[in-house]
View (spheres, rainbow, N blue to C red):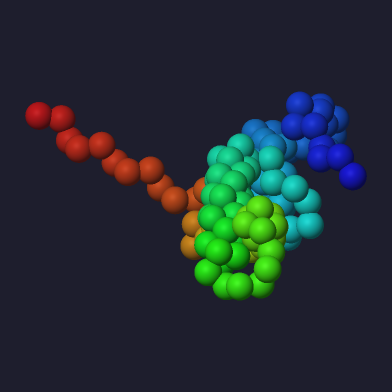
Length: 127
């Protein structure tokens, strides 16, 4: 399944005036789930976390293979550790992003339609 193109035009009969289809997509992807996130910031954070997990797992795998006499070369320890780091970092970062998505859309911060209902701060009086 390919993710939807954010530039796809939605017929005017299916939108409300002033609505942002991409904002609505983000709301659905973070609250309902099951569809990929298109937020570049989230995807970058997950990519960094998974990359760090792979590197950390490979280092731990080499250390364990050198310390424990299992008779396997360090390269296989690095490969096993990198795979374990990949799996663990993917699930852990996905779980953290899921929780952050829920926090972004708490009822106190958004109306049922997903629009931000907080009042902007008032500027200080002049003078």
